[in-house]
Image 1 (cartoon, rainbow, N blue to C red):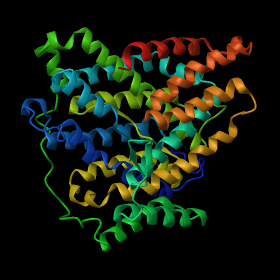
Image 2: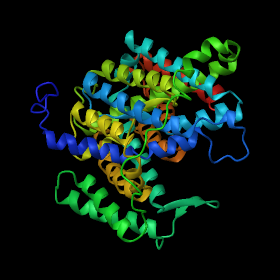
Image 3: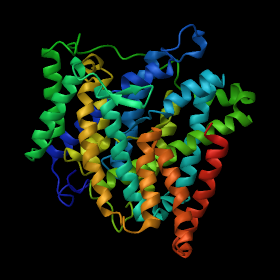
Image 4: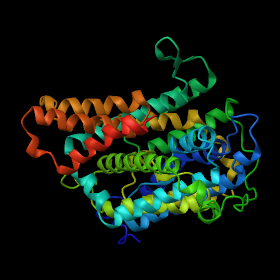
Length: 445
């Protein structure tokens, strides 16, 4: 196993990979709770039951999709990157496709399946890898730093440090709130351990924060240890069956728009995550992503598997950067994360202690680590600085990794052409310019 995952070559150990994999799992375990709530539209009252996906089935599908996707990524692509149904994509699935468009959730699952199959085809012919490798180094660094700011912003939100303000969009939250104080404590204790160079400081910070939260009465102790696994029957295979049972609903112009939106968001969220985590882990070579094709294929397979099981698009998770910060460097960490997702099927009650204030410090500190990529951008070259800056700042301000990438990709050809460096732009970047402009015009509605 040590030779297969190249632990010595990567300068890591079984212990570091285990802690890294566990840290990643704890950082993204919230999806096991949030995804079923989102896809079952629990926040929307007075809906027909037919519009709601079964909560228990979605929980099981979420755990299995995350487990299988992460293990495939770890074994096949050998990256410390975990997968799970994506946030944002699940909201688009539930609130836009099902609730607004009125498309049955069964048909929406078919749309997710189609997007995954198209991704596999694109990966098989090498198109996705070519696109990622065509991205200039400056924009790759900007993507990594932008995602760092994005997840830091999410962390501040989860902590209650940054809240909604109708007058100025965002503002300072109530720092006397118990949960916010717990998150602040978590940030302080984690920063202390990271500053002292303690391996796994982020993980230990989460454990200590959870314990303190339970002692303070802010986190409810787990009500049990083991519970029965909910049945997958209500959602399993529905995406495939629906192709033959309701072809009139599947093959429509509206569904084409849905599939294209799934394609766009997943493609560039995944690309951004792969580049950011690989850069943070020091796995990039000559500003290119080794084994990019395998990583992208693993991600595509995760989407297909998730759709068949009964969940929205499965994608690479930026929370993997928390595991990297804790020491993960190989695919073994992703396998560990996957195994914990499998265990979560039986130990669901224990997940009650993983609350937003517990995970917030990890996101904030990982974001601080990721913005170091800004130092590798040549800010004195205006034609590079502008698209890089817009990429970085747009991600947190638009609350979308994909939108930040799109804006940067639009401005890069403009500034380079104006500077007389048009020949240095890869043809694929010109194609991306056109695609993103069309996206903002037609799809981003």
